[in-house]
Image (cartoon, rainbow, N blue to C red; front, side, top):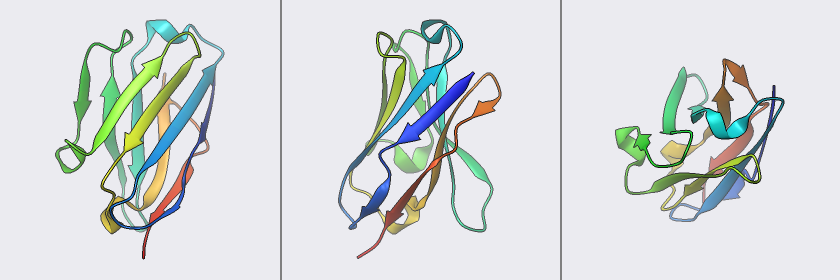
Length: 111
């Protein structure tokens, strides 16, 4: 199993980013996928989860109505669309499945 995230970067408060996680080594369409984040000096936090078919999604309260998780099973990719970013969203974002983690992508929200 391999997960490769991309799409992070530096963005101003109020801006947007779209993260991608490309998966390989398993049947992607059969598993739910999750996005986590870890801010400096803090523990890892579950941000969003999507069911295997994309029909069911759950979010941590702090990102509801700002972040959207979605997937393309034909491309073995799960996405995290992040809007109205705040400095509190600054973290390393990682995707997860089957207890495997990607390398993460850094998101920094700062003016």
